[in-house]
Image 1 (cartoon, rainbow, N blue to C red):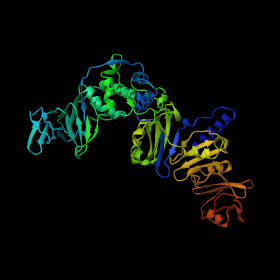
Image 2 (image 1 turned 180 degrees about the horizontal axis):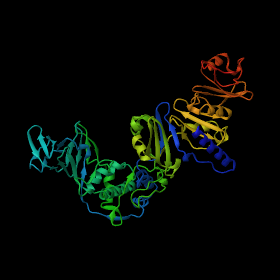
Image 3 (image 1 turned 90 degrees about the vertical axis):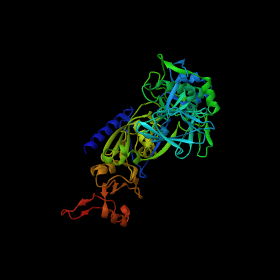
Image 4 (image 1 turned 135 degrees about the vertical axis):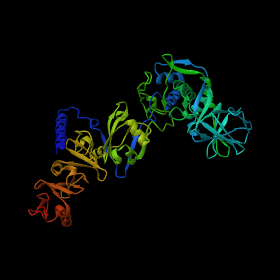
Length: 541
């Protein structure tokens, strides 16, 4: 009962504050507790796509459509940076999708390939298969010959094809280098400006406004130069862990070209050749993501600022934006790996937000409630576990919906007096209002309990007592002389003459057969009580 007394104190204080015409405690102070719904799935609604740091790609497109130049776009997203230029140096790009136990190489056209280490030529139409063999490469060509090599570089006048097990392939300009190890490291050594021709269309749709594509070109060029790894085997990778790189073209298993570099993005790269953003003499770390949803996120550099971005906000972005707003359904079980000792998820509680934008902004902290205890999570971790588009999300509140269904602040419950809290057993949640409470659990949904009915339920131990959670809200009896709530383990009936009394089990079943309070028995005048010998129970009516 201690926890309930503390809650009652909060309720009394909040009611007094409301009565004085001041603002009640915000629900965000307690958290946004969301028990797992009955179907086992959470529904998330959110804004933006990605980490939200630096340039919003959809924001850049919206600004370009509105008439801003690419430099104006970059000025907004990287304030304090300046225009600079850099030479067209060679980048060492790790091709992660081909770095494994085996790599297969082929000539993309009728011209043969040159294999530097062995001095051999790979004729058109043949395939070179290279296997990992510790500190060596085991190479063979269509069964015709086999050799052991160290690191080798492969080149050709039209680039190099890397072939997947299913026969599809990607062509890379420049050279392909294969480095031995427990697994192969496959690297595309390619000039910066050529590299960008495979990056910009992978990061921004080629149909976008030319100024947005120029902004992407400068951001991608700057990003690549800012993350160089001179002491490592490679400078950058080809996935979203760095920035996506698609090479020169892709082919299906029949050899048909299914994608090639678009003219629009090639033109944007050429128009900005060598141009970067700089800060303090260094190339700027120009992070970007698909959409910031209306607010950018502060990053690790002074020019990566948290700023309101109306051109990325829902309703302001360019046509075609599907990520400023989004909704998705995620099984609660997807978050179970974060539960201690292999428990099952019972609720997710958002406990902190950054305060920027709609719904209180991005989730900063959360608590995962499990059958085995709790786990503290960052909003980013929730995003990763759930596969969400961003950490700016909400889960609709069943309590809030039930309150609205009763008329909101103007209804019988009145305004909120506390935030939402998890129940002690972590299987549900509750919120107190000026004139009652709403309790929710996966099995029962959200229902209100008020007045004398609530006080009787409290005396019986709330949801942890014999009655469990409410299964209905407060309702009037058909004759209008009383009120009742049904619960998992019984009912509570109230009338002015009898007060609030609980009826349970077989006694309740028999009373229902007789016609409830409209039967000759009338309303209960006592709650269920054990007989003196402990062998039975009774209610008086």
